[in-house]
Amino acid sequence: MHAKHRGHEAMHAEMVLILIATLVVAQLLLVQWKQRHPRSYNMVTLFQMWVVPLYFTAKLHWWRFLVIWVLFSAVTAFVTFRATRKPLVQTTPRLVYKWFLLIYKISYATGIVGYMAVMFTLFGLNLLFRIKPEDAMDFGVSLLFYGLYYGVLERDFAEMCADYMASTIGFYSASGMPTKHLSDSVCAVCGQQIFVDVNEEGIIENTYRLSCNHVFHEFCIRGWCIVGKKQTCPYCKEKVDLKRMFSNPWERPHVMYGQLLDWLRYLVAWQPVIIGLVQGINYILGLE
Image 1 (cartoon, rainbow, N blue to C red):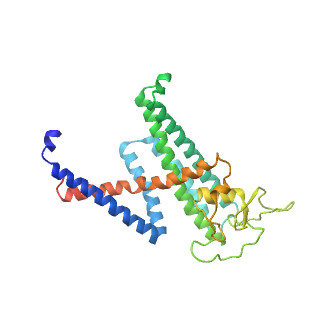
Image 2: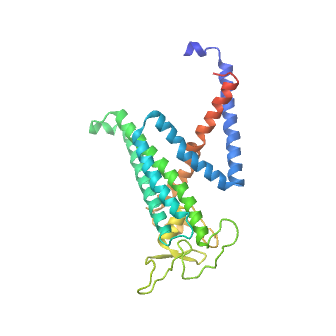
Image 3: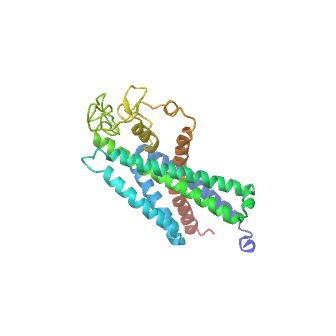
């Protein structure tokens, strides 16, 4: 290999410059696209997140991932179908948030276990259990991939469902004024009564008041902020103080984990496309 590429330093430097230039231009274009047309950007990104790993795993015959992917896709498709129906069934918002919150917690735990397995392997602690380093590292990396991938995918689907449900209920509009007036006794996330009398149909649970004085079911507003990635009031769009909402220090890592997943979305969805574009440019220019 060294003999084949000896004397091609100029060509290699040109390929590196093409890679750097493509990464910079692609990043600028993606940022502009996201700012100007966020809806189409999110939909295309979600589609790529969903399909690109499927292509590679099918090509490499990773059947375990394919089985989990099919199960996740089937349940998520059902939940998404329920979330986009009109009129919206009263129990649908809680079904959506319960499902995606469950996946969120599973992905969080899986990612943590995978990270710990990788660190234990790097420190040689796997030898205490007579586990081969390559087996321990494969186990840790696999769990880390599962946790991060499904965590990113779950948050994107949850955000899409949150937008559909909130716009259907009518107390929230992504752009413009709400289509309905919010009563003090109604939760703007699920559209049900906040305070329920005896023998009255509704949800009985703790409530949470935002700094704008709007009151919501605690489960609903947490699902709206963590799972649905919304950091504004579902009615008036005032900024939500997540630090005050999650006063328990054990809950704050969930927020930081969500921010990490948002950053990893770029690597999983767009990095393969950019690398493929660079390979195409090199092929056209005759670079190896």
